[in-house]
Each structure stands twice: as structure tokens, then as C-alpha cells.
Length: 248
Image (cartoon, rainbow, N blue to C red; front, top):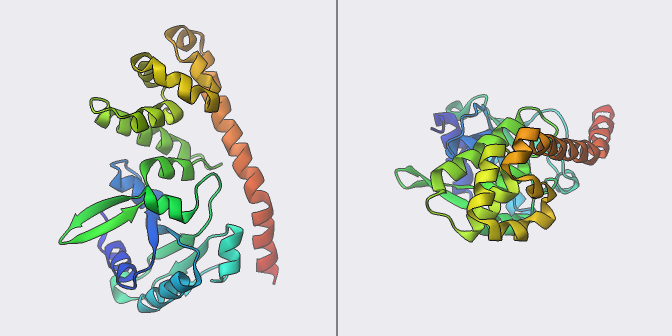
């Protein structure tokens, strides 16, 4: 369930025809994964006209920038997030974070093509990052994101394993982090393993003997650590940029 202040904010953003996709904790909620979040996280089309429409929507919400950076296309293009706090009575105190670029995630046109549109009833709808793109966006150095990735992919498999498609099978093989389920998928669709294994070498360990020896679990932990390190490296210059902006 999307809380009322968030629904109000998203409704006002839609009315201004802002090209955006919901991501972050609220997207996880919509995919039936419990994650409490007081914020609205959006990825935007990095187009000047679209940013103007967002600015108008933020004016409607009486939203002001908090912290750094300021609301500027240059900072969004660098990969920074801009943070706002709403003062409209119907969305009082709500925080809205916007980005146009993320590490390891496709550009907005591809994200839009792959989006999931969800209905909230009363003719309301939300355009949300597709599940694979949401998982990609969660591959960060933050501890809380990795259990969420695991749950998101588990729920996908448990919900749709009796209605497999090549796309779903590829997603499960590429992203499952539960050793027993990963082995189950590999055994059910061995022909798909050969297609995915070049991009995920640990699939060579997707067998019962490797669970018993612990080698598959270690490979999954190594894979996670590599992503954490890559995210830390990506954010190092951006954090320096934020520090410079604070000093300015």
C-alpha cells in the first residue's frame, strides 16, 4: 500500500506529465517485498523539458531542495541524486529523491521500454522500474540492499516458476542468490545455463555437491563483494564532488 502523502505527490507529478519511474523502497513494496520507506525515489528522463515539468510539479508540492547538490541538470548528469522536502499540506514532510543515472543500470529510454505499470485503483497507475532493473539498481555497497535483492528474486521465482518464459528463466539464473533455488532452476532448465553462464561463471557450481562443500555459497559471497567494491569505486569521485559542493 502506498501511503496517502506519497500517492498525492506521485499524482501531482503525473499531472505535470513528468517522464519518471518509481524505484527504491516503494518499488520493492509494490513487488510484494516488505521494505518500509518514507521517501519517494524516482529516475527521470534527463531532458531539459522534462526537468522543467518536474520543477513545476515540485512547485505544486511546495518542495525545496535539502542538502546538496542543488537542482541542476549538470549534477544529475554526473550521477548525483537531488533531494527535496515537500511542504504541501497533503504531502507535508515527504522526501523526494531524483536521479537520471545509476551504476550498472540502463539509460532511461531502455528503462521506460521495460517498465512495469501497476494499478492503484480509481484509474490511478504507477510506472515502476522492471524487476530486473530494480534488482540492478539495488547492487550497491549498502548492507540493506542485498537481502532485498535476494527476496525480490525469490518472490519472482516462487510466483512464476509454473509459468516460465525464456526471459524469466534467464533472470532467475542471472540473479538468484539462494543456493538451493539456483540449483533447482539450473536442473530444470540446463539448456539455459549455457547461455547465461558466460556472464555468471558461478553457475558452473550450481549442483548439490557444491552446496554441501560450501563452494557455491562462497562464490555468491564473492560475487556480492565484487559488486560492493565496484559501487564504492563508482561513488568515490561522486562523494568527493558532494564534499566540494558542501564547502562551496
